[in-house]
Length: 288
Image 1 (spheres, rainbow, N blue to C red):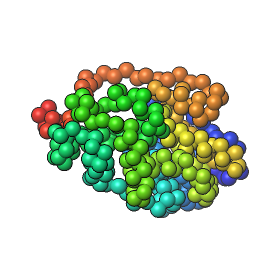
Image 2 (image 1 turned 180 degrees about the horizontal axis):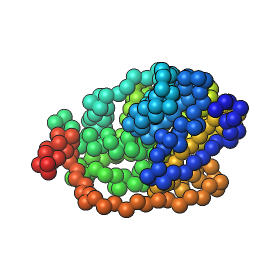
Image 3 (image 1 turned 120 degrees about the horizontal axis):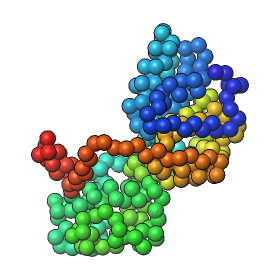
């Protein structure tokens, strides 16, 4: 496929859950002989990249330069490192910051003031804050829904002023030049200079998604709106699934109408929870 053949507006395809997305992607790849390196392909996770490279190898039957293939997390991290000079914040560092903020504001009841007692609940707190941040929830909005956040009832009753902790935590991360996964998503989605890093690619493909977080929606909308050539070489391959209709409306307005497939589940699924990773592993061991 030559650059002249690429569509002048974003090309959107819809797939049933059982369709082979790799076969659908291959014809969209721009190539020059065996050089596919001017394609950027983004999947929800890393696994499909193996199958795309395998298919290209089968079709080429000789050495080739593969496309640039990322999971969505890797794509965000790649952009973030080009846009910002932050260090990754390890989980233990994030918990340490949360612990100090809670102690500093006298926000912990006596039973939670030791690091050992705070640790398992701090993990739950950190995960909750990350989910809120990647969805674009503000501290002000959080004040109205604090009681709905998934923190154990006992600790939730004793951990006060959660919305204040939420705002202070990310302010402290930025002050220290540290980034968590959700902070990287938010920063990239709000950044102005995204397209300059995408221009070298003749074809950009987002494949296998059916729903996005709020930060991902902001980023996709920015890529669609600010593409200088109106979306030239920009493709979206969506799986039909719950949440797709809302995603399409945010990205493309009322341009598309599609049914959301809900495949029947024949497996007996049970969901278990534990306060930390150790508890999860022990529970899994008992079940096995």
